[in-house]
Amino acid sequence: MNISKPDFSQTNIEKINLLSYYSETKKNNITCLIGDGEYLWIRHEFGSVIRFPEFNIEKPSRHEIKKVFKNIFCLVISYIVLPENENKSNSILYVCRDQEYSIDKLSSSSTRRNIRLAHRKLKYGFAKPEEISAEGFRAYSDTRKKVGLSDYDQESFNKRFSLFAKNSAHKFVAAWYEDKLIAFLSLIIIENYVIIQGTFSTNEHKILKPNNLLVHFVLEHYLTKEKFDTVDYGLSSIQEKTSREGLHNFKVQSGFEPIPVIRVFELNPVLLPLKNFIRIILSIILKIAPKNRLLKKASGILELVR
Image 1 (cartoon, rainbow, N blue to C red):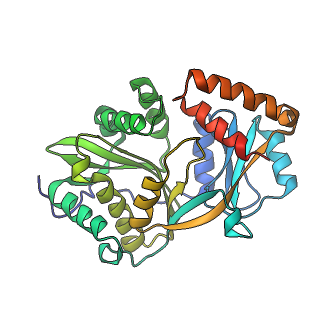
Image 2 (cartoon, rainbow, N blue to C red):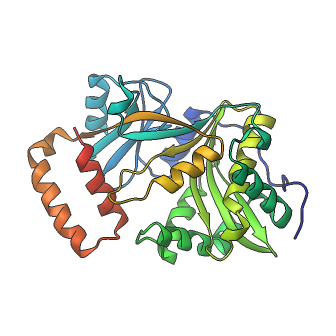
């Protein structure tokens, strides 16, 4: 199927602000707190709270950290700051802020070739939540299996995206081949920035390079056309034994700047005396369930926790 232009028929360029996002998040029974800066603190998973958006690098005060622990019951709080020395970083933040972005500015000839191949072969554009719900499971499941995670079942898929779709700031873009959905990205769009929250594609159609095309589409649409300030592609993984090099190269070759950061994890003061005991218990359980995503993440966090 050839298509010269993406499908914009489901585009909604109405922007919601951070306060509206806070209200919608609370309405969906997700605990959150307004931060002291231009950010929120949101309950995530496995008893954790993250600062949102994650690309905010402002250092929170000790008073604010205490306030978060007081107002949200959680085990650990996470946020990022810039290191004084790049050698002391423990993670990479991937952002693109080039409002003159174009395929011709990409340094990787293979990435440019992949985008053009996918552009010729695929239909792509914005997708409705019900399209993702009906057709996206294969792409989700293949991706979760590929990275060695255990949450690749239908129930996990349904739970994740039924909740995700309830917030008006959450959108999807997708690629189709012969009327079959083969890849999609989940996006969070607030004010003047876009967060690529997830990237999913089927193993069968990876030769068509749909991920290259969809990331290019997001950068071109939001930065070049709509003049947003930032597209954020997340942080490098803290899960143990996760292969990072391939994903790092993909993001950098797609036009994202890799920024060394310190990913800070602050353990609830009540649990600090038990940190080593918890680490031992987790290592034992991981030997029994080595692919469990939450256990792998928790183990990685404990290695970095303050």
